[in-house]
Length: 486
Image (cartoon, rainbow, N blue to C red; front, top):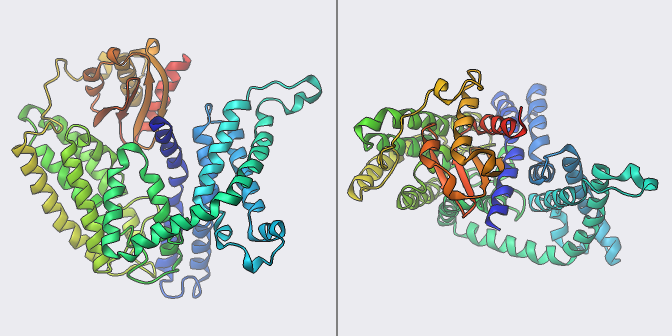
C-alpha cells in the first residue's frame, strides 16, 4: 500500500510541474498591470488569462497525469482515458444532472456537487483509467470486435467503470466533501496556528508521499480553500489568502541551504569536498526553484531527529508569516523564481518581509543543526562510515556511456543495485529513483553512494529509493535504455 501511494505521489509530479508555466504567465501579467489585473492592458489580460487556463484546469491535469504515471507503459491511451474518466464523472454529477436525477430544482442540489470537478476527483479518475489500462491494454477480442482490442478498449472500459464510480460518488461525495470542508475550516479557524500545523504535517508526511493528499485540501479547490488558485487569480483577502504558501519561502530559500552549510561544516575533513559539491547543488536548487528533496533526503534517514526539527521549524515559519499577514505564492514551489513572479500579485502582502524572516531562519537552522549534529554525533553526510572504495571516474565506470555523465551515473547505480539479475522495476519521481529488487542483500549501497547521490532510502524488503536530484529523469532514462538493451 505504501509503495502504491508513493507511485501516486510520483505521478502527481508531472501535472504539478506544469504549474510554473501558469506562474510565469500570470506573474508577468500582474507585473505589467498590478492594479487593473488585465483591465488596463490587453497584453496583461492575455497573459493572465493564459495562465489561468492552466490553474483553472488543475483537476484535468491531475486526471491525465495520474493516468499516465500509474500506467505500466506510460502510454498515451492511458492519458486519454484519464480525460474520458474525468469528463464522465464531471458531467454525470454536475448540479444540472443531479437535479434531473433527483427530480428537484437545481438550487436545492447539495452544494458538494458544484465542486465535483476538483483535484480529488481528478486523481480518482486517473487511478481508474490507469487500472483499466493495466488490465485491458493487451486484451484481444473476437475477430468481429478486433478493432476495439488492446489500447482502444481502455477508454471504453474506463467510461463504463466511471459509471459505477459516479453512482458511488453520488452517495459518498457529499459526506466526504462535508468532512473535508469541516477539516479545512477547522484548521482555517485556528488562523496562524492552523497554518503552522499544516506546515508541520506537510514536511512530516514527505517520506511517505502522503503530503500530496494534505496539500490538495489547502492548495486546491477541494474544501473551498484553494489557496494557490485564489492567490494567483486575485480572489481572496489580502494578507490572508496565500497563508498556506508564504511560510515556505523562508524555509526553502534560506533555512534549508543554511542547514546544508551546517552539515558541510560538521563533515569530516577528508569528506568536506564531496559534501560541499552535494550541498552547493542541493542548496542552489532549494533557493532558486524551491526543490528541497535533495537536501531533505540527505539527512532525513541518516538523522531523523533533525528532520523532525526541520518539520517543527517549517510549521513555525508558516505560523509567523500568517500571524503578520505576510503573503506570497507559488505555482510550483517556494523558490526565488516564484517569489519574484508573485511579489507583484494583487494579493501579495509585504512579501519582502519573508526575505527578512528567511535570514533569521537561516541563522536558526545553521546554529541549531550544527549544535544538534555535534552534540548527538549524528551521521549526516560526510560523517558516516568511510567508504572502502574511491569515487569512480567515467573511465572506470565504462566506455559505453560515451562521455554522458548521466549514463555513467546510471551505469554505476544499476551495477550497485545488482543489474538485470536483481532489478525488477525502475520508476522515478521529481528527485528520486524508485526501484524494486529481488534481493536487498545484493544491493551494494556503498557503490551507489560513490556516484555522489544525496542519499539512499530502503523502504521495504524489496523496495529502495536512490535520491538523485532534479536531474533524476535523465538517469532513469539511461537505466531504461540499459534494461531494454539499447
